[in-house]
Length: 205
Image (cartoon, rainbow, N blue to C red; front, side, top):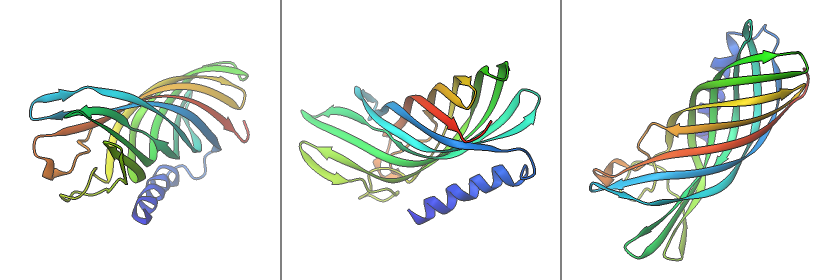
């Protein structure tokens, strides 16, 4: 977990250092995740059920030019999915530290704006559980034969928001690009997909 935190804060430092003299506004975000983790093994696509969770963290916004801003932050995000494999129900619910890096475009007045945003995200697993046939255990992150998921994930997200003064209500879609299963699982593949609804409150305009 310490390595995850170091990586996350390093990414935040890279994002903000080039613009440290710009007018940065910061705040907090809380929201709701509807997630699924697609699973394919030996050429078979396993049906996955969605799970719900929350995301919470801090957000900073840096003016770039005109109506464009650079929006980043540090989030805790709960994801997961449910499968039926060989008559057993398998539930996996990882928790990640996540750093989104989005370019945001806004139009409207000073009081009300509509915004569109898109960009990559970087995530690191820090916890969560896996339940197989009623047996619960903590998720092991790594690339070994006894591990459940890889430690890192990278993906792309996009969305839209309604800005009312210091309050932003937004919806976004997040798609993971990396196979989350350890290399020892052969031709199996798992990727994360998340629909999120968020409320962001900035500390100042």
